[in-house]
Amino acid sequence: MSDSFQDALSGLAAIVGDKQIIASGSDQEPYVVDWRGRYHGRAVAVVKPGSTAEVAAVVKFCAARQLAIVPQGGNTGMCGAATPDDRAGNVVIRLDRMRAVRDVSPLANTITVEAGCILAEVQNAARDVDRYFPLSLGAEGSCQIGGNISTNAGGTAVLRYGPTRDLVLGLEVVLPDGRIFNGLRALRKDNTGYALKQLFIGAEGTLGIVTAAVLKLFALPRSSALALLKLQGVEQALEIMQRLRGAVGDRLGSLEIMSRAQIEAIAETVPHVTIPFELTTPWYLIVELTDTLAGVDLDEPLATVLADAMEVHLAEDVILASNLAQAKAIWAVRHSVSEGNKRSGYVVSHDSVVPLERQAAFVANVETRINAAVPHARVVMHGHIGDGNIHVIALIDRARCQDPAATAALVAEINEIVDDETAAQGGAISAEHGIGITNRGRLARVADPLDIELMRDIKKLLDPKGLMNPGKIFGAGAA
Image (cartoon, rainbow, N blue to C red; front, side, top):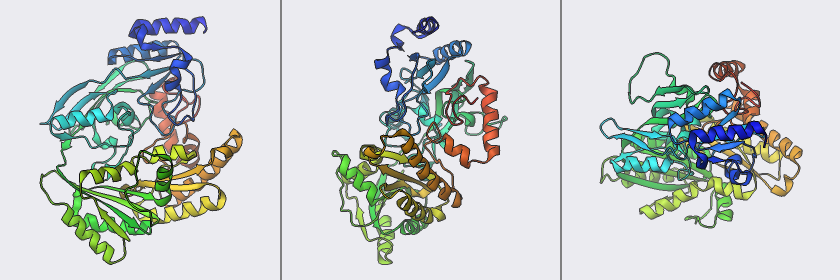
């Protein structure tokens, strides 16, 4: 290690303490490799500050020495946005120690938490005061709320509650020069100028480090009903959704779809998950209704709508969950898609969102084109059909992915098919996963040049030296 880096370690240790610095290569492994093992970077140090003041001091120290700063939450992202590149001077900043729940207000329906709080901890803290924080996704036991905010996470409750952006009232952010933006306000209405907090939601750590947030809470759901439907196509799912919205309104909480191939991949590779239904049709739809009133019979209206759907052949079969255990077993399948895909092969994943009316055409066209162009690819799909977000996944035998150049060409070919179809249907290439490393080339290819120009201008304004999470969204070295 060079003398300058040794001096940097000493300086960082003076801020956070020797025990909160990880400098060893082997000990750094969980922090410099993404969870899929796709991106491998380097860092002069992994630093774990314990307060916003320490985060600000670390950032100011790094900025003065031209050390790149890589904010990292639970490192569960899908696009490598939290992984350092291979330059020697990266400093990874983890907020694991900043897990305090600063305030909970049942009156205001808000919770103020530090960014290192695990998502499940936020959910539990809300539940402790008889409230509900609706953000829910497969990694909720390990992802951190700061990372959720920085990627504008979606999840399975977007249909009713919106993405993370809709759940944030206020933010505290350390800027790239070490200044602290104090927007930690719990106001539902605030028209005093630009909504600056929105700049940092979904910015993937390229504009600053979220250190705390005020989040919206809701009444706790006390009644629910869940069903799994077997369908022939996406068109049927959309018609059923329209009928449900007309019959039950906002009680429609979640609407999740999976292809048969997706569930088969889970069945083959995730032994602790049991598939609690037979696979007899091409598509499977999870419908969940919720109500904040206890004792409301939601099974009856759900059964009525679905019986009518069966009568006109919109569904081949319907399984109504008769108890909580059965409902959890069905949800376990949905929450295992990432794990199942990772174990099934080299994953070429997509996060497209298209208008609701165009989802059926998008799904059909994409699958046909990928199968024709790459016949050895296994195409699986799942998604939040109620908000237009369909994840198209091409699983490739890892034995075919030994040559990096050939693999990159194959991935580019698949990406181009998906992106072109997404654009043809009036959609966008990312609904909730973000850009990071994985999608920066795709963004440059499909985005409106003015959009890119404006984003670059904002980046240059807040981070003129390009030190905050470099190489993400715009490419290596972009400021």
